[in-house]
Picture (cartoon, rainbow, N blue to C red):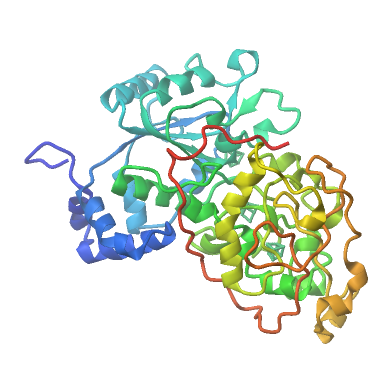
Length: 472
Ligand code: SF4
Ligand code: SF4
Ligand code: F3S
């Protein structure tokens, strides 16, 4: 608070008081525009807007959740400007963090809503149980359903944080005893951004907050209301093990020689090819690592219904993870070269949208390629021997043509039992094309880390459709 004027101080003043000058703020804005895939020319405007901005009220409601989302966000990094941005918001209500309890806490909530009506950001973690009148999760005698309706009415925008709030998450897993749903299943007429992940990557929330503080609106979103800059590509697009995939080098168990060499985890069940998230580039714990770097495949924790889509340890090409078949994703597999991957990724949201648009004709056969198919099992550099694969770096087609999956049945999108699509030559510019046979990419380097793509935004929250289609 500025003592002279009795109004909240600006972010610029606060940063100056803490030893951060204008140059620091500009550097931060440059990093954030890059992270948010905004044109570099917008960095000075972002810096100026941030310097002028004042504390924005945030009301955080925790519903049917495990507190993992809050934990991960609290553990984001130390004294960076990003952390100060979190200081800069006024977290006016958060049950787990506030000192008040009982009636005092409820009063705090009502006062914060009244004082900032129409202007506060509403952050929500956890799903909302709807069964039996919502009795399975109550706060102060009020059901989550009722509280969401009341508090959402006065919000400027809503942040659904974590897979639970975005899609229902683990509480919604079969048989969904509480009737759990995500925020957008209950709220309409308000800008909503989904930040899925179980838990979500903290820096994504930072980016969304910074964008909102600087420009007064949410960043560009995809048709699942996710920030396009962070969810426009798959884990597979960004994975540092991708060169091994492209070479057909796969770990067969978590402790074999391939695993020790850091080979691709596709055959151990990695869902990276059908999972959109930013963890392969932003990582966790201040950029330390992410699940695949720690030796475990991606389990698809940021995708709807990931818990019900089959074993975490069954390969996408195994035919028994049918839940992933209609993920609406054309995994950009087998593409040697970041430019091709980035191009495919840019087209992906549109391909997904087309896939979910009931009025649009859908591809009928796997041969024709389908954005809804999971990637075909890549051909193995050598199905039986890690050492042999290392010794024989020929084209995977030549090495093991027989390892390719059988020609698929009719790839009717509703046929959960259909075999994986037949690998095809991949048109790098065709997001609808089925994944290709991995190539022997001598040009690829195991050490090469794909550059973070800049994904151009295609729309904002207002342009997003009011309802996403449900996963089958
Ligand atoms: Fe917990 Fe995951 Fe739900 Fe977050 S999304 S509340 S970490 S179960
Ligand atoms: Fe990485 Fe998994 Fe893709 Fe292999 S399948 S490259 S481990 S994301
Ligand atoms: Fe989740 Fe997969 Fe990232 S499991 S944390 S989306 S690597």
